[in-house]
Length: 134
Image (cartoon, rainbow, N blue to C red; front, side, top):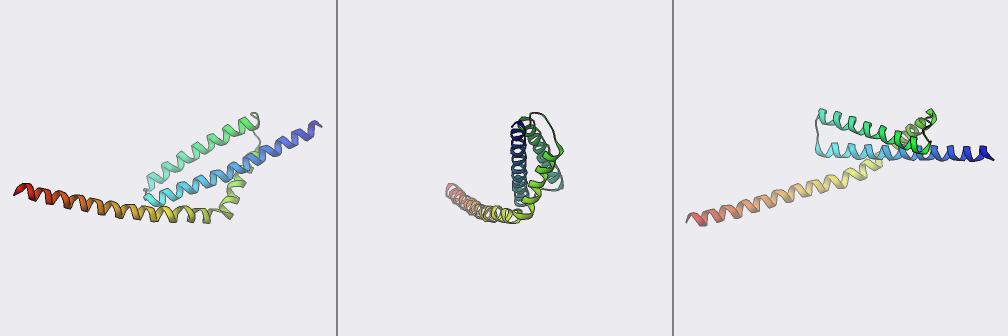
């Protein structure tokens, strides 16, 4: 009976690690979309990648220590990588499109609105200055 609970616990750990790989893949896609929207340079890309992977490693390490009670197994790390790989193969293009398209149009809309507001305010200020000069 003890072997059943051990195997069930290991299966749960592998499921958690797989889901974590999918979540990490989605978070990286979110990071890619924001980098694409804000056009950061090569240095910014490198820094965001380093920060992402340091935080992702810390999160995987923390969850692995909690879920597996400190026992690190190669198959658990492989399961995280498999979750990320399957996410990128099956879901990444659609998720990137779903995230990028509305944010891109919202950014364009806000940029246009900002331009109109600035033009309107400068027009009003110029009219006021002309009245004050008279």
